[in-house]
Amino acid sequence: MSLRLAARLQSSLPSLTRAVVNKAAQRPVPPPRGNITSPQDFLKAIGRSAENKLSPESWEQLWHTDGFQLKKAGLGVSERRYILWSMEKFRQGLDPAEFAHEAKPEKKIRGRGPAVQNGKRLRSRRR
Image 1 (tube, rainbow, N blue to C red):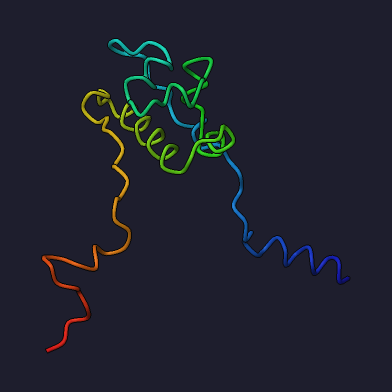
Image 2: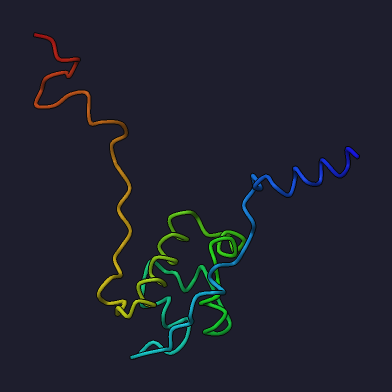
């Protein structure tokens, strides 16, 4: 009796974990256009040396790649996000020359700025 009750409760409660589903495989594959005819051409066009970090074998394989597969390939978070963002922009019909941009440079000063500005040591503002 308790097994039936447990099974009924389990089926009525939502799962607390995400299902691992490749949503990229469900999205339409855009046709190659312009001078972009291969995955390597696309990765060169978006810049940030993405062609060295990722090497898909076919056009369909590139467009069925999701974030989990990019993570397995050893790409960092910002690299994965940029590649997936660029793929979506290309799907929407934009040319990589319009949306591709360089990475933001690293900060040279840590924190909220230097402790000394204009020859005065900064402290909390007191009146």
